[in-house]
Amino acid sequence: MAVNDTKVQEISLHTLKATSKTVHWGYFDNSVKPALEINSGDIVSAETVTHQAGDAPDLMMDDGIKEIYDNIPFEQRIPGAHIMTGPIYVKDATPGDMLQVEILQLTPRLPYGANLLANWGFLFNEFDKKERITIYELDREGKWLNAKFAYDYPYEYNINGRIIAPEEAIREPALTNMQIPARLHIGNMGVAPKEKGCFSSTPPGMYGGNIDNWKIGAGATIYYPVGVEGALLSLGDGHFAQGDSELSGTAVEASLNCLLKINVRKDMAFHSPLLETTDAWITHGFHPDLEQAAKNAALEMVGFLSSRYGLSRQDAYSLISVCGDFSITQVVDENKGIHVSIPKSVLLPKA
Image (cartoon, rainbow, N blue to C red; front, side, top):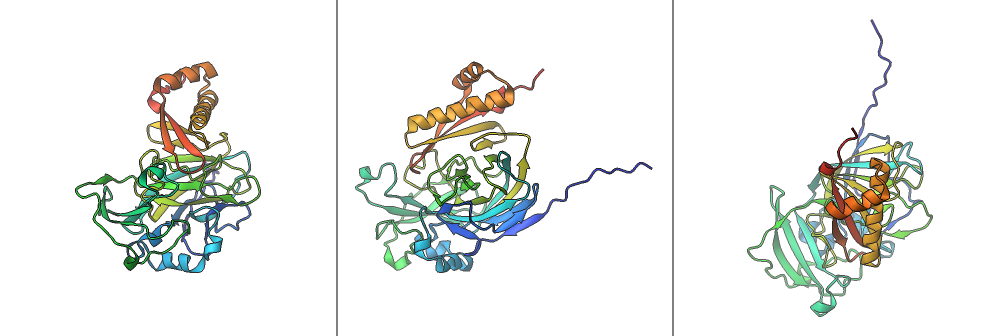
């Protein structure tokens, strides 16, 4: 009888709960101690907690979320806004590799989320510089959102995680007879920057971070260029819904439980976050100037088509012009975002 010596990799399932010991609030930093260590190919069930739970604490906070808010002081919630779970250390991930993150499932921790008309929103000046919260409720099927109430924010929104008790605000009906399609996705996920230091979680970068692309949801796979040993993946900023642009300053910010399959890819290389959906490849461009962000996204797609499909730069340029779709990812995160999508259906296998 022949003996098969092929080794089958054992896949482990890990659980990463969000606690004050396993999150870092407001930053990426490659010196942060890993909250979890896994092998390539493992699956991780990770909790994320929204930084806006305090906007409706009676609806958006449970005991676990309160523990984080109670035990991380305000002075440690800087320089960005987001509560990031992790980092996750992936064995055998080295600089130059790609980290492949498949989003298998996203489920709400609580069925409520908050949208803010923020002081960093695109139309803040046109709305008399007033900040307003709208609380949305997700239906049981996870398909639609309805506004539960809204209120004018009683302070300036300048403290990360401030808790507004129900009696501090006048809650009013909002968006009556309107329903919003649910688009559960991860707003902020990325590997640690290769450079030393503390980097705000607000602007996206080549390591990922606060990309705010609503297509980064269940069924999608995103690839990050590894900058440090172990990659050090962190995630947070769950969203129930968002349109292209994130115009008011935020999406519907919510706490999500995320099921991820994480692989180290040594057979591919790319220097920016690359998104794969069931029917498209998507590259991203970031820059404070939106026009330059569009150029960056286009050049990233030219590079992708050239390296993966062997197209000349001129052929890639033509293909993008005739079938590439450009969208504004967001206009409110310091580095503005553009993403460009090419349908997989146009990319035929080589003869």
